[in-house]
Amino acid sequence: HVQLVESGGGSVQVGGPMRLSCEAPGSIYGSSLCVGWFRQAPGKEREKVAAVFINGGSTDYADSVKGRFTISRDNAKNTAYLQMDSLQPEDTAMYYCAAVPAPALSLGGYCPRTYEYDYLGQGTQVTVSS
Image (tube, rainbow, N blue to C red):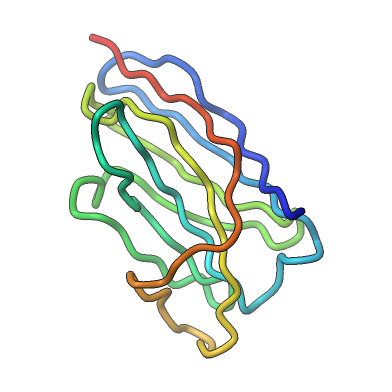
């Protein structure tokens, strides 16, 4: 059973920053991997907020977080990050890290928004308060 491990959630005030980390096991972390961050607030559907293709680092963002969130990766640590700035109350949600192999993508490719992610973390709560 492949498990991704998130960390870094908690409470923050409006306008503040927070960084989430997602560590993947070496058995799946490789160049042909898409890593995404999802979030789900109570009563709302799960939303994919960001994705990164490990081979080259191409990124994609939901319009709701573009310009405020940054996804990155550290291949030496098998870890992806989600830097969240200018947080707002509507960013409050459970955040999940997910990954899917993407052998069809080449260097610099973008993880398609239609991809179904195979591996999922346990989630970390982010609460933004005023």
